[in-house]
Length: 121
Image 1 (cartoon, helix red, strand yellow):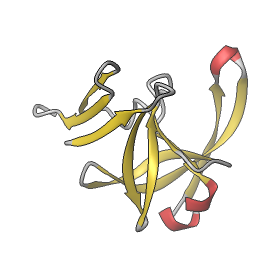
Image 2: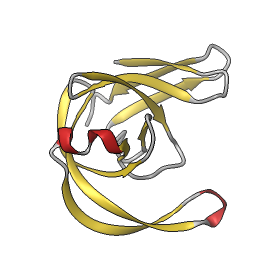
Image 3: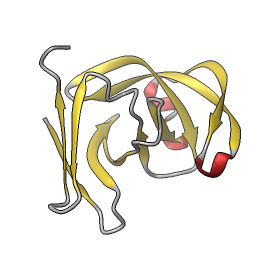
């Protein structure tokens, strides 16, 4: 099980170790992809260019993003070939596609986050 917190700005976050470095990862339930990662991790995750994709952001803004396949550690496993875009940020965004096969509980009152691998997947 992965546990995290809800920040004062109401963002559900977890800590995740990537390439030997701790990072803050925001659970973004409005993002239906796998990952958005800091540019600084591109070389450390064996990123392989895959395609360009049209992404619709908040407010209906559309952007074209380069999508890479990366070997990404999540929930005690290395997910080979997760799809990721890279941005000038320090945070990792975890989208709902990466959470497939998991149960996500966000309790805004208690300020807790729990991610548990589903037993039947």
